[in-house]
Amino acid sequence: MNPISMKLKINFVILLSFLSSCSQVPIKNTEWCGDLGQYGASCFNTDNEETRDIPLPEWNEKRFGMLCTDAKNFSEWKKVILKLCKLPGARCTYTDRQKAHKVGERIETFILRVDGIPELVP
Image (cartoon, rainbow, N blue to C red; front, side, top):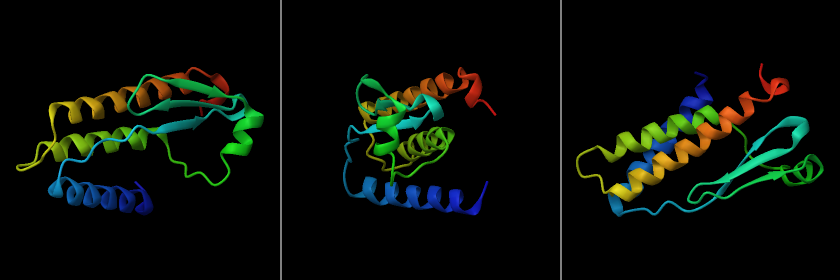
């Protein structure tokens, strides 16, 4: 694992620990998009079943300035969040854990979709 990726994960864990120690933190519904190369992008939401595809010309305009990472990194974050929820004094509700699982499922669905496009598989 590269040092930058590890540093981001450590900072993310520290932030989550700090926030969860103060009060219950709601998981905000946000849209996440994955780059599909010449096919544009495929997007999903963290807190609902909505998905959308963005054609390449529109995606080329929209993606400028976005942060990118491998989709598998988000699956790792899900594991960290669920591990934090098991710590003594954690204020994660059953609903919080279910939301984390749902986000993980949506990411895994995206990974499977990308793996199904031969031109994108290394």
